[in-house]
Every structure is written in structure tokens, then in C-alpha cells.
Amino acid sequence: MVVVGVTGGIATGKSVVCRVFEELGGVVISADRVGHEVLGRADVRDRLIEAFGRDMLSPDGTVDRRTLGKFVFGDPAARERLNQIVHPSLLAEVRRQIAALRASGFGGVVVLDAALLIEWGPAGLVDYVVVVTAPEDQQMARLVEQKGFSAEEAAQRVAAQVSPQERLRWADAVINASGSVSETERQARGVWEAINSGCHSRESGNL
Image 1 (cartoon, rainbow, N blue to C red):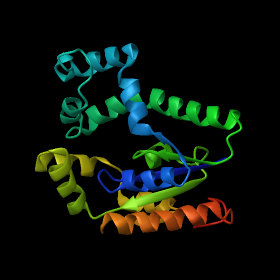
Image 2 (image 1 turned 180 degrees about the horizontal axis):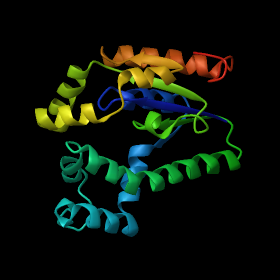
Image 3 (image 1 turned 180 degrees about the vertical axis):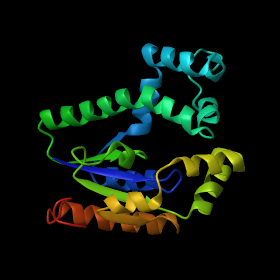
Image 4 (image 1 turned 90 degrees about the vertical axis):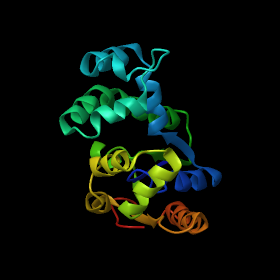
């Protein structure tokens, strides 16, 4: 079994790359989806209420991620507190799912879609790191146009993540998703073929 981590800044195009990998036979673990599940746990929710108050809850009592984001993305200390509450459970569940696939005898490619892969530390978690890139102004434009964020919210989200240079330091392959969707898909297929050639790994150098 091979574990491929796909990472990149918010709105760079990771979802397109992961979709292509899934279509080609990969099993995708979405850290964002796992994060949703973790936020639904009573113990995590209670700690978030203690840290940030009940104003970040939806009318049904669940955590409103958009509102929570407004509380933390402009405040590094608040963001660090959020990470301390959520990330241990999130990462533990990601590791559990990977281990379960390995224990089942799965012999294919597991794709970990994780924006925060570099912050977690890829070593020991994935075999390959694929970094998806796009210019920051394009990231912010996508957030405004596709997610309905304000320009200020978009800028805060982009600024809050690890620098592109730090991501690229870990990259075994880089996909430039600043162009058309079809061009991003073409690059993704090429990276998939390189991974499945079995000729490279994190230890032996870039794809």
C-alpha cells in the first residue's frame, strides 16, 4: 500500500487532483471530512464552547465552521488554541483510517487530502507529498467567487496557512493548478503514473 499526501493552500485545486486520483483507483481520505466528524463529537464541541463561547454554534447546536473561522483566522493565538483542541483527534482518526486500510490487506494507493499536511509533519504519515499550487491572488478570488467569502476573510484564510516555500520543501511532485481544470487534470494523471511506476519514493527523490 502506498499513501500519497495531497496538500496545498486553500482554494489551490486540491479537490480536482484528488478527484482524478480517485477516478484512477485511489482511495481518498479527506482530512476536511474527518474534521467535520471530529467537530461533531461532544467532547470536542464542549471544549470549543469553553474556548470560544456559544456564539459559534448553529441554531441546531452544532459547530458552525464559517463562524468559528471568523473567530480564529484573524487571531493567531485563537487559531493555535483551536488547533490544540481539534488536531490531535483529527490526526488520530486519519492515522486510524490509514491503518485500517493497511490491516485489511489493501494494496493500492491511499490518497490523503490534507491542507495541513506540512503542519502535521508528513514523515511517517505519507510516502509521497504532492503539492498543488496557485497564485495567492487566484486563491483569494476563488474563495470570494466560489465560497462567498469577503475579501478580508479570503485574505485571512490564505495568510493563516504555512508558506508556499515550506510546502515546496517537502514536495515529491508539484501540480500548478493556476490554469484550466483540464490542464490540472492532465498534470494529476502524469503524477499518478509516476507514483504507480514504483520507481520513486520520499527517500529516493522527487517524482
